[in-house]
Length: 201
Ligand SMILES: NC(=O)c1ccc[n+]([C@@H]2O[C@H](COP(=O)([O-])OP(=O)(O)OC[C@H]3O[C@@H](n4cnc5c(N)ncnc54)[C@H](O)[C@@H]3O)[C@@H](O)[C@H]2O)c1
Image 1 (cartoon, rainbow, N blue to C red):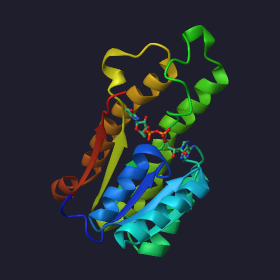
Image 2 (image 1 turned 30 degrees about the horizontal axis):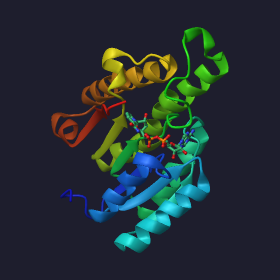
Image 3 (image 1 turned 90 degrees about the vertical axis):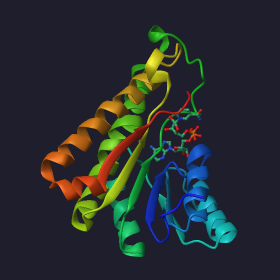
Image 4 (image 1 turned 45 degrees about the vertical axis):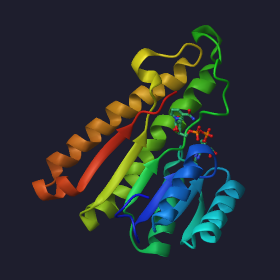
């Protein structure tokens, strides 16, 4: 179990399914209060219920479309109204399992699908970070973890839009960390760090 998360408030986007659900369970097991945020509201409710029942933890479900700025602001407000603080944001929501591993070559990708991929996987980070940063700055602490992908290192044929979006996650994260460093004094930067994680595919 991870230490130091007791009573922390963690928002997990895309928490209704897959790896996001596992993050929610992990935070709850470590004693954190979990905001399960997902576009699939019934799935978010289900995971919040699991967390409460299995780990005797505090949790709430938030319906969010990370591609919509107002929706992400509503998510942050809900977390703040209910739990009074926001300590951790896991930007995990993405279009991933709903597209085939081999979607096809560059010529076969519909421009509308490209746009939605960028709106969710990249603009979603932009909106979610903007939604929580005022609170984290006020608190003078907070952690944002953005989920990237190992595919960005060597490419992965058949889903160029997905891989491109995940490469963007890394540049976004490094830049956000630098911007925050410039704005903050040293001690504050130590307590607020952006991070990106590259997973296998
Ligand atoms: N599964 C893997 O092998 C793998 C490997 C590398 C990276 N990743 C990354 O890890 C993360 C989770 O992967 P996963 O396998 O659990 O994916 P998944 O597709 O199973 O889950 C994605 C979640 O995001 C939610 N979501 C989708 N669009 C949304 C939106 N607009 N607003 C809010 N929520 C939305 C979905 O409802 C779902 O709950 C993703 O960022 C993915 O790119 C996964």
